[in-house]
Length: 292
Length: 278
Image 1 (cartoon, chains in turn red, purple):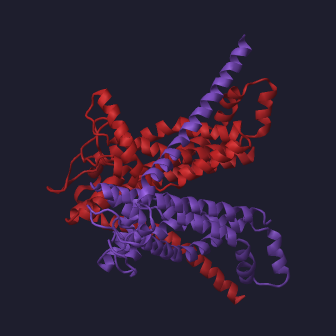
Image 2 (cartoon, helix red, strand yellow):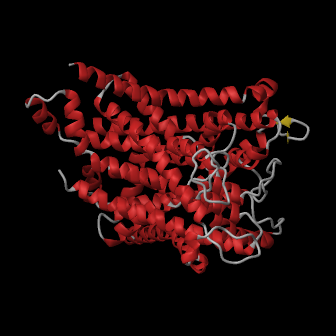
Image 3 (tube, chains in turn purple, green):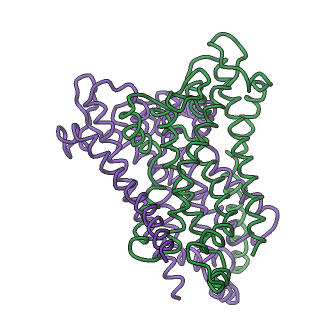
């Protein structure tokens, strides 16, 4: 049929458009950061100096800031998200609390990051400032720790939804076998469910990491926007995303703008790698479960 | 003794899990509570049809950003839904190495940080046009919405029972006719829920708009001109030093939360009807 051939061509065109979009995204970032890429090369990510006035650009403080905030956020959020996953996947098979909790985590994922940032600025920042005064460090209030807490709250739904999915894929008969041997629920969780779901939960952690890595607004509002190398978790700092958000419209020199886009290119590459790995792990997990 | 120990441990652990789970949704209630408490006093009829006032004067509204957000969402939906639906059908229908690659690319697109998408829209639209515009913001938001539309379309097209398709073929319908007249109507609700999820994803996005739509203190209906949006207004007002502006920002946050909650409820309604269909 002629129309069928045309229709297939249209379908392929749509797919090709999306594929080209991703390819073009990478190429445009390379092209626009060329000026900075040529001048600083790979040293860009190893240099600590970010000085727009003297046209010296190095992204190390932001890369360190990004890794610090996202890793601390992951560590804070992990016990919480695993608890939600266990509660929904093991303890509560149905019922009212389960519905409320599911709905609440959905909403937690749905609240825009700007509102997290705004709330963090007016609620968490004073709290952290109080904590800092007690500890005797400079009471900025804003900084890496505050950003990490906001991020931790934001990524809980991501890790918990994937963890819950993989926990529900643990075969019922081995859980029942455990119970029939007289194991308690806690022993089932640590002896059967968590070891079985390990790689799937790891994938969830990776995807949440990718999400925290690129988060912009919530971090920008509470991290304090300092271009120095972060010395402690209480320091004001900047992440790769937040420095772009802060300086992009103010960058008047070409090399400054190009360097910011170069940071964007690295952000693209990092999140690309993290997400690819996360997706591969979870795909492999699904295949393994299916084959058993 | 030993077994009692184990039961105690089991119960303690259970308590611990319940406690942590409760703690992790506590921020949700705090956020909603504080936004309502701070925002409710800013909201009155004027809030929805007046423009913002300069700092120092109380009152004023957020009409410019409401209109802007509405326009951005409509434009972004118009860009992303046709191409997203097409690609979703493509991935669901055709199985070869290209669609396998495409699926990975869509995942990557979904994982792209929103600020990077902002840079892309800046490079693709703002730079060639020579200035900030609503259309560039809409392009950025469309790129964010695209993977959501593609994935939901793919999933729902897969869910359509194969017998429907066979019935259509047996009546002599061509492949094209089957897709357009049978598969698409049958997956309409799924695609609709994709649009709702996509909308609620982009309505609160700020980062991609910072250097595309840029913001505008006046109502703008021209897609070629800079425009304001709810999240942009919240950002600018929240970061300002003025007390009155913070109040407006809380009011706008409340409006945004209500919109997101509303979209969530709408999704539940659409989803429920969808489930009972087959």
